[in-house]
Image (cartoon, rainbow, N blue to C red; front, side, top):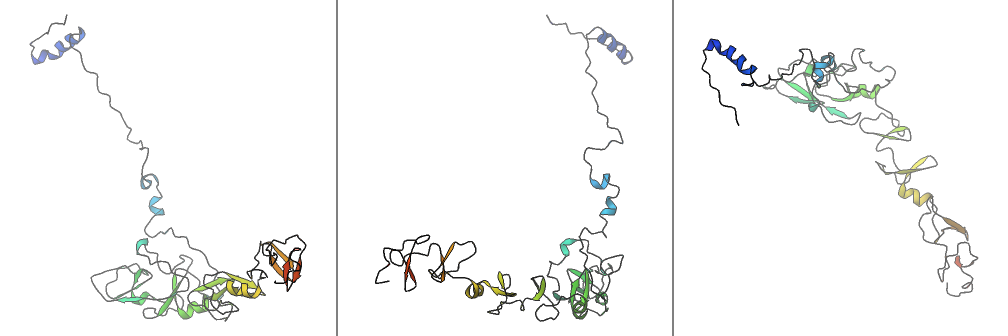
Length: 299
């Protein structure tokens, strides 16, 4: 049988007393107090961004910093030495998206002129806004008067230049201090360099000793200190099978008989074509014959 519904009229001042009375006798039930989680003010979330947790973050990734690895080259005697404070006379750009694509070392380039416009790029040398005509080279913009050879200070605004060790040089200075020497013609190499046999070459100078054609990226073979293309090397120096006239290459099984070299599968009877490897044989007109056809007339 259900408990009867109790209705009580009270004044506001007596509400607390009545509520206490009803709760004490089990007539009125109260909801449990809500549970609140408390996070101390100094507690850190499980995962916080590095610029919050790492106090040195702003120094590591400041706009003037770069994560590019610079390879140190040994300079020839008398070559210009970069400043100890920086390996480059020109600051590296902040954004890598504006950099020009990588080009081969020693490639001759030329800056492009642009007239004054509403564009106000930053100079790659002084990092200041350019107001007026400017040059574009190596994916960056420059004041025309500040784009100079790092050694002789000649203006490169209307001259060809070569980039080397994060600096720019006129062709004369690059040739004097940095350009490698060709092992064949003994002149300086400007542009693409071929590296082979622990030496440097003009691509047009490293050629086959027989046909005189440049190798490019093709394979070559050495004989008596001279390089040969594969075609000429086989024609001039390889041992050919007397039976099939194809080269006997390294790893092939071969037989030496009748003053010639044969593939083991090519040394056969000229009449019945039975293989004669390890078998007694006869010869007629410089051709091998088995015992059965030793006296054959038509060979």
